[in-house]
Length: 196
Image 1 (cartoon, rainbow, N blue to C red):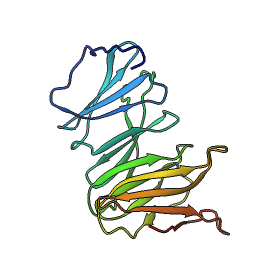
Image 2: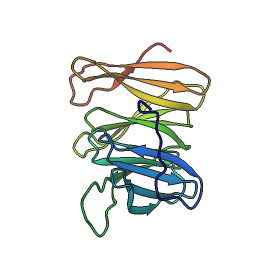
Image 3: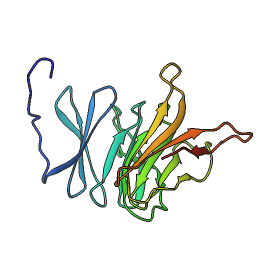
Image 4: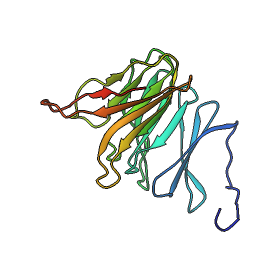
């Protein structure tokens, strides 16, 4: 935008592109079409490195802040994939974790700054805090209270320290809930709901 220029990448999808995700470094692009077929491209070389097919078109895809993981929401599941990066492998995409249990489709998600947690919003009026890395706790934490489908969920961070202080969830009816992190005596303190 600053240079007022644009370019067209020399590859194309076989159907309409519905989701795009760019790695934090700006080196890689994940482009997903409405049939669930994805292209993993090197933006510097403008070349497709890998292809992957999801079972259906994801409603959301996003790289983790460290660029090592890719989260994809496919129907009622959230899948965590290892990002291929510049490694040469026979199977470049490796499915690390799958989070089931959503009663309806997942709408969006947000990564914690340290890439350890994923905050997913859902059409079933809830949001869930998912521990991505093993050893961070077992079950996802559930945020309830909305009266319409939750369309967005975001981590609240302290600008000085980068530490997570809570979360925000937004529903289709315009309600915004603030959730604050309350320090407890156990290792994984649950957030407490704020005032909508």
